[in-house]
Amino acid sequence: MPDEIEMGHLRGWIGKQDRDSDTITPELLKRFKATLDGYTEPVAQLPLGIHWCLAQPAVAQDSLGVDGHPAKGGFLPPVPLPRRMWASSRVRFHKPLGIGVPIERTSTIADVALKQSPASGPLVFVHIDHAFTQKTARSNETLIQDRQTLVYRQAAAFKQPEPGSSKAQPQNSARSLTITPDSTLLFRYSAMTFNGHRIHYDHHYTTSEEGYPGLVVQGPLMATLLMNLAQASRPHNPLREFEFRGAAPAFVDQALQLSVHGSGAESLEARNHRGALIMTASAGFGDNDER
Image (cartoon, rainbow, N blue to C red; front, side):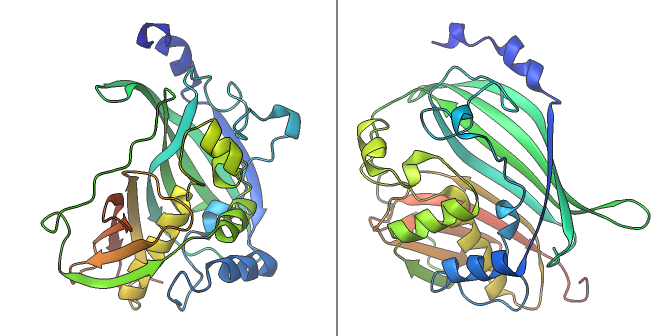
């Protein structure tokens, strides 16, 4: 219940930081490309979204929760709600990542907020600022900034999202791609991102404990596919900003249609095989001489 959520205690985590370092190795790049082969359109530069594979927390096995996530109360606040999802991210690309260049990831709890939903009950949003930097001769240079929002909610029976009407679906699609994520894709992406959340690979847990009809497609995986689709639509203009927001879960072995709308390739979405909205996104581009 909402009165059991001690927000004063949870907000004590604001300002808490976590740091780690990593490098894009040729092997990581090869595996990233191999995993997404056939699910994205080729781009000339380093594929976007690979930063979500870098410097992921390496939590010991006995420090994981029953859902496979790191147990609460460490870097993340101990929110007393059982379900956690990556709700959205706002990413700014300042400079391209380089292969073999040491990268430092600094994560900061920016805010913890409570909201009430008539349908879902209490929702706790944890906003995390991730900065990916590299050392230069003078200082640390920021390459990517990523404001990630996690949402915690009560356990509840899954409800299928309503199919979108023809009016709800924009007709001026500039580029589209239909994919069917399978369990191998989900497994390999979880491995690259060191994501132990069991809803992406443990069918029994997912269906019996969390009540989903099948394995859940990772939100950042769909966002990665969308941002690379956006870049493919504007190959001469580097992606500078990308924001996504999840609307509903997508499931393994069900077709997804990814679309870019408008001549500016600024609006994107993912819909499932029933036409229901799964994810919305927006993209902003720079000039071709900025990189």
